[in-house]
Image (cartoon, rainbow, N blue to C red):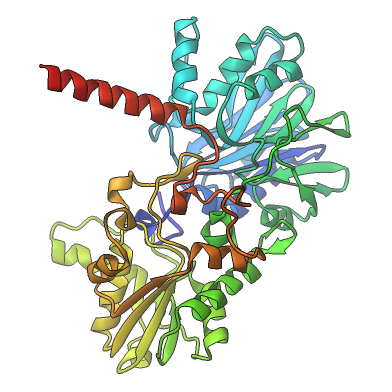
Length: 485
């Protein structure tokens, strides 16, 4: 599997992208194009399920959309005017074909296919109860829990069964479900994960990001609201809201890194917000330097904003190869280390003797920052300063982001000085949490009801974490047993 992010081992990774279309003759082909635009949201596996009015057809595979859905025979094997698609990184469940979505099941009410972006924070407990009651799971994905809740619900209609299932789950979800009657698209009541709606002629399209609508030629219509279910049936679109209204808490990291910069969210350009983040970072943490250099590619918009605000020239001091996936496994460490230069290489003639400011979106483990700083030193930089367009990532995410366990997060182990020493920079600074909110048009972070989910920075989780609490309870019990023995 090849990765479009050369340092993907040291990034927070959005785990999934979803796409759905109803009312198009070439639904599967549109889904493949839409998934290609969402490839950055999941590079481990991809799948499409279509419905031709009689039967469901599914093709799922490990790897990228290109290479799996670029053949006519694959698309022809997915006939129908309705289709759902999914690109995946794994956050729950191992890397295996049985976990690749969309998942499909034959229920008493007919076929049911679901594509899920997010993570259920009580899936383990629900799964345990369902298995005890006789359910047989075919995957280790938390998404399958939703299918079993629908299948075992005592309500009469499929829609009521689906709503009953959603009222039992906790955490984050944007779902696109396909039934013989049509599509159902929905977001969790807090709207943690994104989902937008558009139109292409008579067809209705849903996607994780607006850029997927652009690629297939659809017109952006609106976001699916938090807690809303949009039902597309027989060419008609209707909306229901079965949950009590809550203050939304969408993921703030979509603005920092996850979404493509050419996407739109909350009627604002992701690119312009990232530039504003960089400008705010320059206001909060200025430095005397000769060049502002982005860490490709995610640091580029913030670096432009930093350069414009500070007046320091913006330059491409790190050149990225777009034709390299994972570094080849080499037998010796010194040879393996050279693989870094296959991906990123310093623009030595530009950097030598200069004081540089490196702009990146985040620091997770710190391994990438350490390599990049050393690369600047090797290229002859006089000083290397690091500025980060997000606050320190100190906490794990349980809402669908592939976050290392907290012990592996550099900011959970060190303060800013300790992190600076670890990456061997001359200085290191992060945008403040209030500064991040200001770049998003707020006065700052509200202490009682903040507008976004920022738990990875603050530890303020907007939902209960049932499974994590259960694990903690088991750990405490084990410690007690050890002390008694």
